[in-house]
Image 1 (spheres, rainbow, N blue to C red):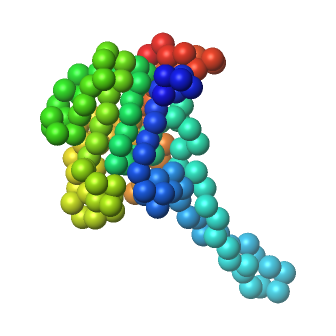
Image 2: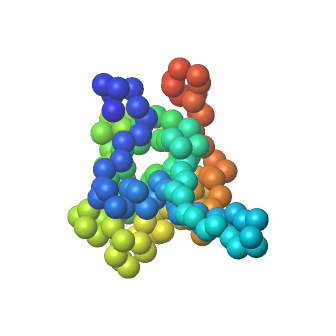
Length: 145
């Protein structure tokens, strides 16, 4: 993260990352003969971290903009889910194994941590709405949050 100056790194199963970063949208176009042409396309939930977070995955490394955005809420996380690496890097890990993603217990743990960190910081997959709270970044990627 420091090497590429990114405030966010996430690691998990490809299927879990994909499910949080994309959503399937079904659409129809009326045809001249009265029928409809129906198709599906995948759309981003959030394009990048400047729009907020798509969710939590197995390992979530947060840099200064996200640490400031979450603020004191990070301290409310269970100790087995949070690791600090100095003042400017934290790891939030909802479950021990990446294969726990998508399981009932994994989903419940993600929801618990999101509720503690602030659901307004995350994409709402039920309402398909963007996060209302995002980290503040300048044009060059330096954080001012």
